[in-house]
Length: 428
Image 1: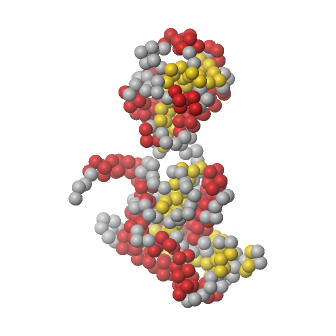
Image 2: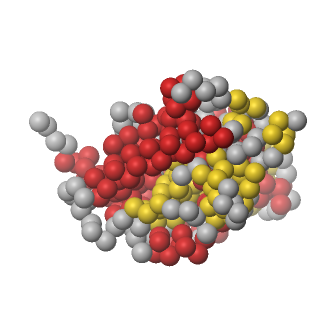
Image 3: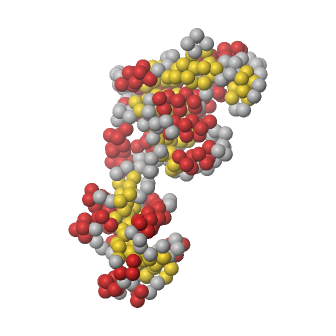
């Protein structure tokens, strides 16, 4: 069997900063009951166990809809769904408790085996499940009494924090209890979102097996998520949106059929699912002196190809106040510079570069828009740029071909005729 050592080394080099970054962070991971029926469930739960051994604090929330439906069918009991929410009568509650209990035991069994199998073996880690959720009845909606169907009222944050601090994986089932001893059937998506919000989890992760989801990009911000939420009945979109408005910074959607998808999403730069970020992820910012090496690493290959004019470290350091960058997890993946020219209230857009692995997105457009905004703020009326290979791209962004003769005098004096760069300009 062949083994690609360089790929393994490359993966560890890429994963190392994420291992450090995620140590001690709280992840709430939600999996539906249908995923428990997948052949890949053992691998998935082994990956969850591995996250714990790498130092992440894990709360695993499971659903059991598929198992409940199977119980209802086996006992020939007609279940009722109203507006996507199950009405839980006495018989349905008893069958739900049995289905949820069986699902929980199956998960505990898989996790225990994973934690006690080489190379993970760690006797200090455990799986804890229990009564951590207080619930209340949904009540009557549209004239339908939902009986034993409930909503999460509160979660025992202190107890969960203590268990996580001691290195345990906490397993939450979609059952809640009222102060008077009533048991309620809950949506696992709500359990996950509510718990993540109350614990201010670093990540809320949904492992999904939905083939009917809208096509999702690699990255979403909260605004885009809300647009999707408004046209979708998927409960996880509702819960992610609510959680991110209540203290959760990032959420991830990962397809269950992606082997190792959980690890790839969390421990590689580009992941394999969809990340929803509550902050300005991949947004341009003004560069600082600490970004010089990152800028040099980005532009050197383009300089070697003749796409960009060569710049020394000293030149970049001197001009750093003119640069704006886009970074991802500490790596500069895009840059551009704005040079104000006093003559004719103009400015030059220079050194526009996007890392080759990130050119499929909108990062170049974001940088140009950012530079234009800075130019307008400086009362610039005309933006110019010199390019050898991106003429059409700039034309699509509102630039037009211009003449060397129209360059400001000092730029005309510095023009390198051997590069034969085309002059482009745009009024702003």
